Image 1 (cartoon, rainbow, N blue to C red):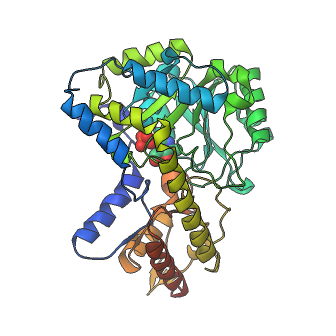
Image 2: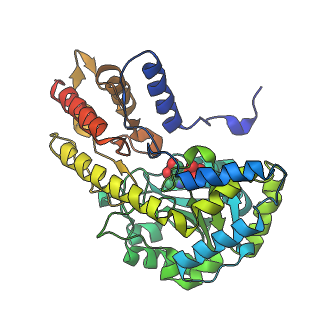
Length: 396
Ligand SMILES: Cc1ncc(COP(=O)(O)O)c(C=O)c1O
């Protein structure tokens, strides 16, 4: 019954683990949820007030597909600030989450026959969206290089069919941040081979000093003409469920995206646009700074505890809110006679026997890792990593 394009196409495994953890919780089991892709904090009161006000003012109509003028101006100001390049309101758009912005960009830029390079491991959705556009995702392995891009390997992966690359920094699932030197070299290759760059910086405000986030357009201004910048309000503003994201791109790309989206979902929720207008205003800077500070201490606790568990090496995370330990030393062992066959089975066993939800690395293109999100209360981090330690000790 289903169309050919849905063959081998599956739902997001990150949502899958979240749902299973939720189900166990509903049965009364206390599950430590290391599978979350969002902070466990509430949206700020100024954002909530803005939406109440929008309701009272009757903001119930359709808006322009890519958002009300004030919001597009606000987004343009934000992107101008991030890049040091001037962006106008017609070079940006507001979407129902960064996921929609990324999908739209893939769909209007890539087509059958095109190859799109994505450093691997990758956020689960990136290659699927390339496939949905009919193009071919090409994974660029990075695990052997502490999840950093090796420029010579990237150069070798470029073929006459390569049309673009998708970069995500700070990185989900590994927590690494790409250094300026790497991004400059990547930009050089993109310019040399006429590649489009989708630059996903959904976690740009969640970087732990002394590490710093680098924007590719800021580093190499010529990249502005071939880059789609992608931003999200889900993470730093605790608005994941609101569905609020944005993008900045050359005008023809923005126009094509507006045309595409006008036939799919029209505008993102009018009310959410008013919430975003307030979220992106300076009044919320302190809220974001507070979230970063809290995550910084959670990161430090999580990495200290994880480092004490033998046989689970990990690369120091400098941004976002994930640890991505290599669990391959557990894969030839067994728990009470049951073999730990692969990372998916490990994640199932951890949920069932240690009551902790993690996301298997297979969701991100790795069969040797699991992703642990530390954007949960410190008490939960401590309890969950203690359970993980006990589970690891019990393997034979
Ligand atoms: C790297 C990356 N890009 C995009 C998104 C999507 O964010 P949004 O909630 O704004 O759709 C996520 C969410 O987890 C992400 O991790």
